Image (cartoon, rainbow, N blue to C red; front, side, top):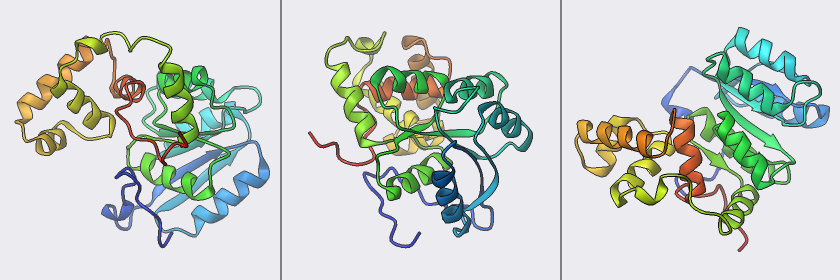
Length: 237
């Protein structure tokens, strides 16, 4: 989309993959919303819609069959819920990146979404442009969270202790955590922070151990809870 704004450095360009559009599957039970999104994305050369559904079980089956690069997922699907869709896809080893687009943005639900393995989440009250920015970011492997979602979780965290192990992180480890949660590889982290590749790998290993993290999704969740991931748009506080 011409004129698409880059906010806080979170919105990557898909132009680095010329001629290779991101395949997208839509799982949304509101026909009007799904149709609007499908029609808009079909006009953009960066994306190719490979399927759509209003049913959770179908979303799981078709994503495992089609292996799309991106799944735009509503949590409130009939039958198999959006959270169950994420869990089943991750359990099956699917590498499809998942952007949750939902009217639910309570802190407990956001945590469940992150723990399940989604890369980003946008509230349905957000402007359509924000959804498009989120799609571009998540399709490129970078986390993206709507301002309302970020605000709700940050307000909740003020009443709770930091995530387990977070108080043992060094300033450098927090920098590395922020870089990893932004979707950067060990090589990119090393270049960004001016350290060797081996040092970046060691930092990442220590982060996984200290935070009892199993994968990059776990690290992203902790970074989000520590406020190391900048929200999509400036929260109204």
